[in-house]
Length: 329
Ligand SMILES: [Ca+2]
Ligand SMILES: [Ca+2]
Ligand SMILES: [Ca+2]
Image (tube, rainbow, N blue to C red):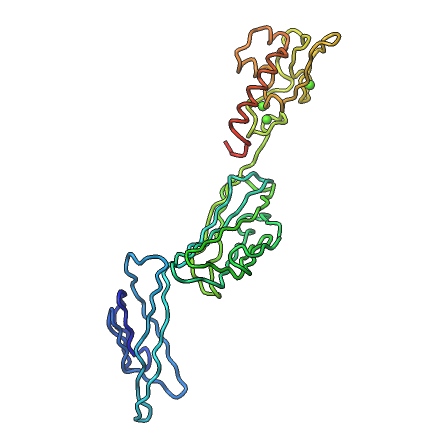
């Protein structure tokens, strides 16, 4: 038996691999000789090959041996040649979390599989992803989606996601995603998620895909009803230190211990307003005075209607510039 390789090299000769006196030798041209088998016997052996640098991903190297020859009871016998295909990085497998994610919120997890071969289709792809290993309670909705990666493919699960029967055309790729519920009990931190290998009919064809899910926990540390991620003013005190004299008409301050600004309504049908800590992005009158550099009258009698409205317009414009407050500071 003889194996011929054009670009690969094997390590040194191996002796007695198929009966005493048998030998496989050579580097780029492998020769096997001296093998013997008892009746009904078989042998198998492994030769490690070095793969040259620079093999293009998606390359398929077909390797065919010579015919096998030998003798049985002095008669010459032959066996047909052996052949197999060696594939290099045919498939690229990756995953990505949409994060940071809020504990108690959701995160989209997407997977991408690419076929790097110009000429060959790939069928029979499977993988699994155990979400409970990432973070207990991290789950999808369990709905199975069809045809996400080739016709007849199936993807889904709850805490254990699986893809079955994936297929790709030459140079094809598929991306599919699932919305995950992040448990509200999750602690802040980074959670690594490693899938199984990508398998083709049970044989690994790509390394596991990995990504890290970053979870943050949104608290209301100053207990003013506004979560830290959107609270413009930390360390808000309720009740606050203003007014220092008395609450004026159409003046606003957090005088009692709820989250609604207190005021003296104007007599008759004058303009008025109702404001909460949510409206002021978690800032008290005292903090608005400091941030805006307002005069002493506001400290003595509470924040005026005009200043309250101006502040709310200001923080709302910052909110819209920042977009949805979904990023952790
Ligand atoms: Ca707060
Ligand atoms: Ca109040
Ligand atoms: Ca605050």
